[in-house]
Image 1 (cartoon, helix red, strand yellow):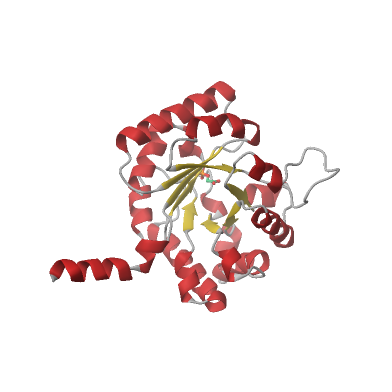
Image 2: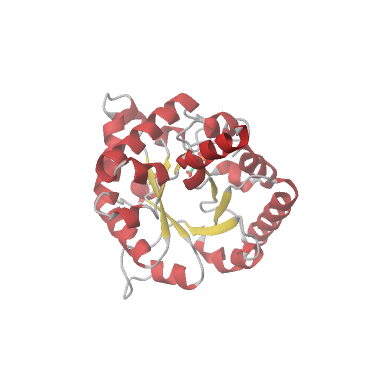
Length: 270
Ligand code: PGA
């Protein structure tokens, strides 16, 4: 009877059942080919030996290495690949750009969209990001949609409203089915690459607010299915507390994802 009750609780715990736990490593513009390959092999070996949880591990190498890295992870069910960006255009005369269809054609399952560095240095707006989300989804590539406020915005009363609006303007035109393929990454800009991590409480507050925002448009069942990752100076030391928060479903990790030991420890914290 006790066991049955436990099982029923297990199956009724929708969050546990439905939300993917994800740890993604965003390598940004780092590593030459040999280093990228070495990092991948080390991660695969460490994960085989040490990772006992069901976390999905997503590697986001520079685009030029995607096909190479793919070969190292193709037989590893926990691992997946993400591009760091894609074009908002379908195809054509856009020199230097990479389309979502190209990513799909080489087996890339995810793409980062709207990372704050792209918003800041490449002037990507919420409207442009909505187009990128559309082309990714149209090609079966799941967006990892990044959002987050600057330090200046955080000091303003409505910083939660600012981040909610990023979701509204780039995602809320999607159908329910489309939204379910999106992963959200909350990355406060003041915490990215600065060594300043948001506290688990600050991150949890934002994640809960974003989930409530999604629920207000799509309903609680859909909101409960969306994985919301935290990003911004995540380390093996800060990950356990962050990942234990009820609305934090994993992490998007920059600097610490470049070191196999550190990143594996973060994956183990999930
Ligand atoms: P960081 O980067 O972990 O180095 O702060 C996170 C990110 O930009 O995705």
